[in-house]
Length: 171
Image (tube, one colour):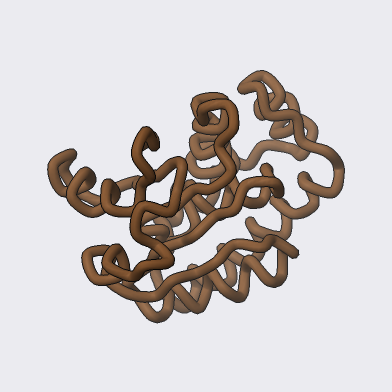
């Protein structure tokens, strides 16, 4: 496939119901650069996925935005890795308070540096989900949870549900 132009990416995001302003599109271009640079040092994504990051990671993550229930103000992304989908949603929806949970020190550092470089106020929690879910400030604190490539559904449920408020949703 190959990289989408900024205009094609904007059209595809709008078709998903997530219109992106110029500033946000520039944020995604920077995110692509930062991911490519980090991927040269350690594995965040495959080279094939990196070459088509707008489709494989960005649009995939943005497809969750219309599924967030009305009134959702907080989201936790468990096993964030390269920030897909949590950091992508934080970049596109600045009103959403996003917490990124990542066990790998290198990936957590990448998430912190990238969020800061993008001007995104995402909180990064480094540690294992099963341990972090016991922290009073994180337990039952989110309206929505996401997890991508974390494991089989029973594992995903076990690791994400403790972060959700009653009535919260898992995407």
